[in-house]
Structure formats: structure tokens, C-alpha cells
Image: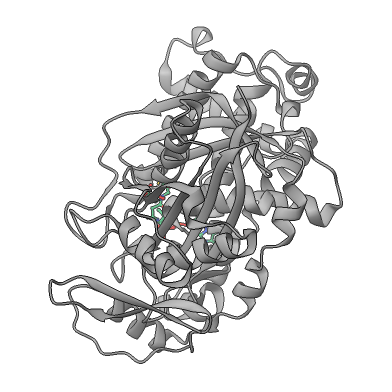
Length: 445
Ligand code: HMG
């Protein structure tokens, strides 16, 4: 089979920024280091009053199609992954297609459109759907457009408020892709969980502490399942490990567990055993509490080893670069982690063609998915054309009072007339309501 994967990617950040240590922490009475060191975040991206999931998704897609000179007739499928949808019937992809038809020649009447839902995992599921569509040879040589777009807002005062974010990722999925080839092998860890959900409500009901444990448990299952498909893996098999990043501190917790798992039976484990002793095994303990205590102590010691710290600095830390500045983009989060890794490769001046990344996606509710991606020849040309750093630098820096207004402006239960903080330019904007309650959009030159 020919290679199938991501040909190109584009990111669109919400145009506003909330500085967490400087603006949010003082009002909350928190130590700024809770954000910078504990959660690993410096700021959140938030949507201006004229932005929503459609504008951000359409803007990312517009940049992608425009710079790659792609005709609408070459797109055979558009899937939008989101957990911020505002309509139970009409998919967001139809709105995005309408926006694109306004600015490009031709139309998207031939394109199969849909919406994917499984919390933050849906972006990767849409990627897999596109992969399957091409692998099944139903695509007639065309590409799929996958858009992950979310306004990840929490209720005011919820602990999750510190991890908010807003942005979109557009990805073009094609045969013989420029950026990365997706592996056919993938692993799943899935269970009926109620740690984070939105039962017909805008802001999530969250059991934050439990959600962290569920993330770790499902990722572990997915890793075991991936190994059943792909065989044993070694940490050195991969150049980067982009993971779903609700906040970088979550990935820090997951990384050491992934390392502990993947060094088992390898030369690295042997080397480390000489320093910190062997990994505890449940068979050697009569009491589960004692085993849990021993595994915690081993994991803490492991995280202090030079081998682990070098691995973390090389393979994991680079994936957190954009996340640190934007917060959680829900469905887009793992896809900005991959992009961060590739931006790091550009900065380091390395040539990672043919190298593999281990990609871990996750959605509350809950399901994790792990697959691998091989970096392709055209990666650098694609990644060098992104302007995400510029977008982040250009965000309007909100005061706390302005943040409160923005939150109200996006709260479906609050009737707030708030003036925009930025002037849109070369982008789609929300333009009011139509006669059937539909949202309307227009492109601002
Ligand atoms: P919290 O109670 O505000 O924070 O909740 P905390 O007190 O647990 O502190 C956070 C960390 O900062 C801790 O680190 C503290 O020790 C540390 P940890 O012990 O966990 O390693 N800290 C400090 N470090 C240095 N200096 C200091 C300092 N003070 C504290 N001075 C929580 C945090 C994540 C629970 C909250 O933000 C939350 O509920 N977030 C939303 C849920 C979430 O993001 N869960 C993540 C896993 S679930 C997931 O990823 C799915 C999701 O994306 C949704 C989807 O799939 O759709 C959310």
C-alpha cells in the first residue's frame, strides 16, 4: 500500500491571551509557580468576541489550502472534530465548507462532511477515518481535510479554568504525504468513565483529580494494546513522543510511566537497575498497598536518573512548546504537540526523515489511542511555513477584568454585549444570527 498520512498542517490560535502567572494567579491568590512549574503553563489562548470554533477552523483550513494552492475539487472529505459544537444536527464542517466556498473558486458539494465526537480524542479519530477512507481506495485520488477546533472554556471558578485554551488545527490527509506517514498499527485503551463530561451543557462537569488518573490508566492500556499490534518497543525507537497535553504537567506525569513501561526487558533497564534497583513486580508483594508504595518509590527514583532526564529533554519536552503558551485545545492538543516537536527539529537543524514518533491521543469519557508516525521527506518545507509563533506574539494580552468580559461574551447563558479587543484582518469572523438560528460568517480582508 502507498504511504498515507498528514501532508500539511496549519494552526490557528484564538486572538486573545490570558497571562496565567502575571494576570490570573494574583487574582486567584495563587503562587505563580503553580502555573509555570506545576501545570507547566505560561498563558492561555482565548477567542475574541468575533471568534468561535467555525472561524478558527475555517481560518486554519484557509491558510492551508491557500498556501498549498489546493482546489476545492481536490478535497473529497471534510471532518471536524470538536467538543464545543453548538448544533445537534448540522455539523460544523458544513459551516466551514460554506466559509471556504466564499473565498475559493468552485464548491465542496461533492465532499463528504461529518463531525467526530469523543472528547479530545476526536481529532485523532477523524485522522484515522481519513486514513481508512484513503486506504480503502474510496478517495478517487483526492485528499481529506481534518479540522480539530475547540473553545476549551470551563465555568468560572472551576479548577480547570487554569487550563483553558482556544484554537484550531487543520490537517490535509493524503497519499504519499509530505509531513508524516501514519502507522497501520494502533492501540486502544477504552472504558466507560465519568470524570469529564458535558451532558447538554456548555462547560464541562469535571472531577479533575480523577481525570488525571483515568488519563494515565487508559494511556497504559493503549500502550499495551499498541505493543500487541506493533511488537515490543524501545525508547530509542522514537525521536519524539507527542501526547495529548491538557497541560504540560499532565504529560510530565504520563512520560515517566511510559518510560518505565518501555524500558522493561531492555539494556536501559539493566543499566538503571544497577543504580536504583529492579522494578517492583506485584508477584513479589503479599499486599497491594505495599506494591503500590514500592512502585511509587521506584518511579520517583527513575524520574531522577540521568537516562530518564535525557530522554525527557530530547523526546518529550520539545512537544510541549506551543501548549505551554496556549493551554488546552482539546481535540487539537495532540496535533499541536506533534507540530511543536517538528518545530524543534527545525530549530535543532536535524534531519529526522525516516525517524518515528510515538503519538498518544486521549479523550475523557474515556479512550486513549497510540500509533506511530514516520517523518517524511517534505516535513521541513511544510513546517517552516507555519506562522504560529507570530500568531502567539500578536495576541492581545487581557487584563483580568477584560478576561471576565470575554468569558461572559462566550457564555451561552449570559447576555453580554462586549466589544472586540482586536481588529480582524485576513480572516473569517462571526457575523450574527440568521432567521433559523444559524450562525453567519464573513471574510474580512
Ligand atoms: P488544581 O487543584 O487547581 O491544582 O487542579 P493542584 O493543586 O493539583 O496543582 C497543580 C500542580 O501544580 C500540582 O502538581 C501541584 O503540586 C503543583 P502535581 O502534584 O499534580 O504534580 N503546584 C506547584 N508547583 C510548584 N510551585 C507551586 C505549586 N503549587 C501547586 N507553588 C487540575 C489541577 C489539573 C486537576 C485542574 O486544573 C483541572 O481540573 N483541570 C481540568 C481537567 C484536566 O485537565 N485533566 C487532565 C486529564 S483529563 C484530559 O486530559 C482530558 C481533557 O483534555 C478533556 C477531554 O478529553 O475532552 C481535560
